Length: 334
Image 1 (cartoon, rainbow, N blue to C red):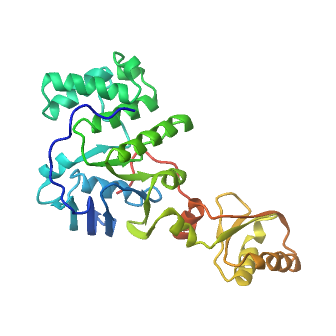
Image 2 (cartoon, rainbow, N blue to C red):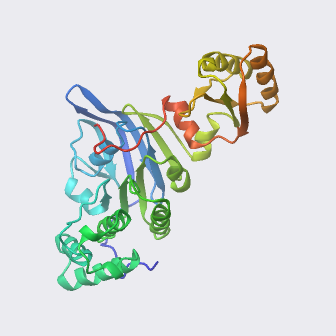
Image 3 (cartoon, rainbow, N blue to C red):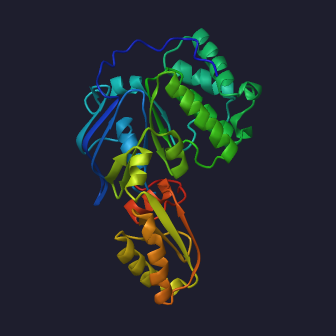
């Protein structure tokens, strides 16, 4: 991929964090969607925000992007207060939401030219930028087609292209690969990595645990509006033990007793996998795995299969939130 031809607008971002969030709160009636969240993003990082549907990820992002008011707490973008100077913040960010903001009745070229003009580019610069971005995202062959003929992956790429017209130093990506096939997701991942290599900072929400694992330098896990954990992928995995014992049980009704026995022997807290009759048990001492099997046999609990693996972010998610993530709904509850 080539870099953009025009230089980004001159902005002084100084040495302040790209994002600084302190005790951020958002209420919708009696529902507290974001509950005293704290977060810091350093320039040049990809930080992932991970959580179940309804956890408050999108609401947090929308407050930072000036799309929702902040009820209490403080948020800054490169040292600029979001509540006090939203017009300045908007010049520092690009936003790609869960659903494309482009016009279905216009062609790809017309959409990008329109966005360029709305962001203050001259006609000449808007045309040049549109051409450049279409090439960058592999859409030049479809430049003259109306968006209603685009696939989901093509729409997502065009939406991301539109958010880059002004070359913002900070990009908010709200579940950017939702609904994409694995090949197109991989292409989007490559694009995101290229943006960071060129100097962008990215705050990413995602429902895909492997996406956070692949892309993020650090991950914040949010559940019920609260940040419940933060760290690198490896640090989060370490929270569920050096390895994980996965037990497939012959009978569903033995799950409770099996969890009790495995937890007692290993001194950890097992958690149920989304797959039925399966337990995931954090293991600090792999030498005790045999003792678990002996104790289960003595209790007449039949194990049909077992494996010891390195922990995954899926297991971190289950351990921290007590549930597996769910497919994205049309709107995340706030």
